[in-house]
Length: 321
Image (cartoon, rainbow, N blue to C red):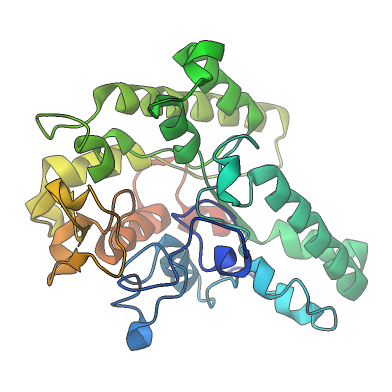
């Protein structure tokens, strides 16, 4: 349906870039990650199986875009970039300062890497050929959650520098992306609440961030008529999972599938952790990330969702333009 898919983002879309960063502290290249991936292999995806990037590629009739860092040193294989590439990195944020100590690839660096890919493609296709190729390609951006979580993290000094609204405005002006989910409802946030309920303040500012994203994109479209986009309201879809789990085939909405302690959220999904037998009835795989089952529904909605979840059009409509 399209010639290529280029992915920018964080652990929700990472397909293995962090595996190639020696000093990166955010990795998923060990069990029990990948327990439902082909051959039961941990690939660097923060999931029990495939993630939304995999399912989106399937919908578009393409193989999953490979991790950029697995191809960066292959100077004689420009063809490797023709079908797209993933720059997504677990732990990454919109701001360079977000979890900088973790060694992830921040968004600005991901954009720099894309510039390198662009140069390689120009060598092969020429300037006009590249413009035509990229104008028909999909660029998916899945980022922002780590920035918001970082603001509310215990010990963060961001609250001393910005009010919540100022910080959300900063993220919105820095880059516009696919919406943040109801991240206050992930197991790590629930575990900090004595009642096991969602962290409502985190959810509120995730929602405000999404509204800022939509407003910016709408303004951008009014100025740049040739730009077309599809915004995915992750927040509403995830909240629907939680409020009406049976409708989507889920049973467990609070606890992580893999981990230890209260809600399986006191110890992350490490080899010493336990994991649930029926991953399909859990929304969350670990402290933060959705299961393969949840990711599949996300991808289905991104591709064919109504305007209730996709604004102003869905991806099927986007690629038909």
